Length: 356
Figure: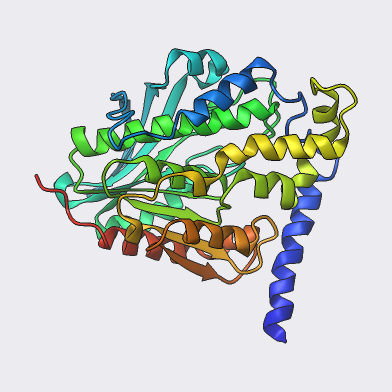
């Protein structure tokens, strides 16, 4: 009975947090400027092009060459930050706000260890994660196990946030698809750099919440076995914006009023958003090359991501593993970093070292 009440407390805390952040007038809701017009049509087409006909299609990606500066270093580790022009095609670049043209990345690695004897995991941002710090704190303790951490700043976030955007509240639905597509392209280029230029022996991709969705997509599309670690992630953005707490943070009236269809109702606006966001359904993506190195971590009482959504992912990718932490979405971010780190270590251990 105590555990049931505790679980309910975590679930209620998610909703209280969501009500405070999303249902008050403290900030604008998501998609306050509507659908995005012709950009949405373009993004729907480009997202569909992600699905490869063959394993080598869209590979290799554009090789990036970050310009690095050292932030700090000790006797055993070094933190660098790099900047590079987003490797996306011109149509995507033209759709981006100018602030997002250049990508930023933090790279925390052990010193004096040959890269072929190390692993590196790229960490992707969850909703509202505008800085490197939280993800560096997650990856930092893994240095002792010769696991480096690379943190990508998402488009529309941090220094890449458009001037008119309030916090993480994307202005248009098209921005969400654009954020995802560009994050995928940049992540693939960074993994290619880690494997081919830096020579790392193992690589992986992870992310929390929205970052977990993007990590699953990148892991699915990668032509070689990598560790894939979606944490507290749904199988689709439909779950987050149409079923979970974020449905209270969505500007449904703005979507209704911006529709091409005359007299669209709120219910019809929700159905259209479901249709558009179904493009983000990870279960439509190919099974990764090494499904045994895929570990999903879900929360038992998540007010944002229901359990059934996590199980949809495992069902679509036979051989993958689901682990559960006790808590809600917000509390698990704070309390369960050790469980996330253990999943990273275990997934990497299931990979073979790359032959040199």
